[in-house]
Image 1 (cartoon, rainbow, N blue to C red):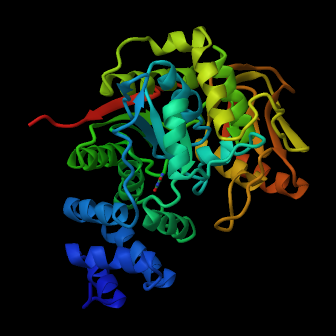
Image 2: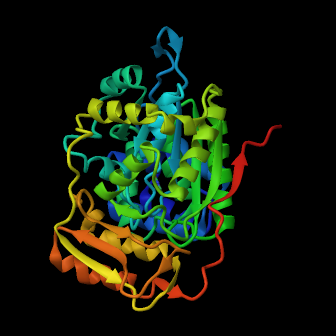
Length: 434
Ligand code: URA
């Protein structure tokens, strides 16, 4: 496509205009090919961040990102002679959000098939692939042929988006370093371009709000959910969303390997109540949407079938589910000064602390520390005695402990009364039937 140039497109959005379909197709294509520079795209992203996009612009921007790479199709896959039900879930990102790790095996144990294009950490939020790659040997870099074979054999594959929506790969990295992550049109198009290209036939979204989410305001999160549900419907992929709270971290463990350890606890029938509640709620939505009503997902945790599916998934991607998980050698424990009850713990502060410990990136493409993380010994509402450990921080780099501890300063309280109870699941958004 000719006749466009980046300054004119940037100016149109900067001045509050609507980008034409052709302008969107051109700018996404030219950026993916390297003909529009990062500095130009950064300016356009900031203009979108400040000015927003119409529904029509978001739809076209998402389509252009999908069209920047192949769209996978596994609809011909058969297991035991029968057509498989391809269903996935995606979260808008949170702190301690390890839900995919127990969830995908539960769905497999219930008869579903999960093709999951997954992300790496973004800002203060952890990435499922970074967590899984802390398992010795595990790799998320799978070819399409390997994904197909694995879906047929073990029923799930969790993989780097790779060639899928390559425009998003570049944009995601650029947004991370230009303060343009927390924008409804950019989040919706980023998530849905990957999800609509990965070959899932139905999709459940976990759309978070609260301090640890990208969109902190519940109403904005609900609007994001509605936008993504509509984008899914437009592509013939039935999509539903749960609106969930991300004001406090999920579970007791935040980081890379430590979140794998907590996920394995859930798969063994234990684990923190909030992680189990959200995992089972999302599982119920996925099974319903995929038309799989044969098994109660909770039974797969009780009878070990989800654990078997997890072990098969990890092995299929080169990991050793029995290997010891890395843990940072440098530690610091925060203790309670006085007795009382643990108050709320700010999710953003914990996410930032864990990022500073080395669990996330400061430079795009850099390695993360598998053993970096934080353990929450006392969750909101739990009793605390004076001198009791409240948090333990882990890292391989001793100098990272100070800045991480500083992030936690003022992010928690011990009081005399428990904090008001919090609902984890705030609502649900589904396609409007016409
Ligand atoms: N997850 C994504 O894949 N993209 C975003 O923009 C935010 C969360």
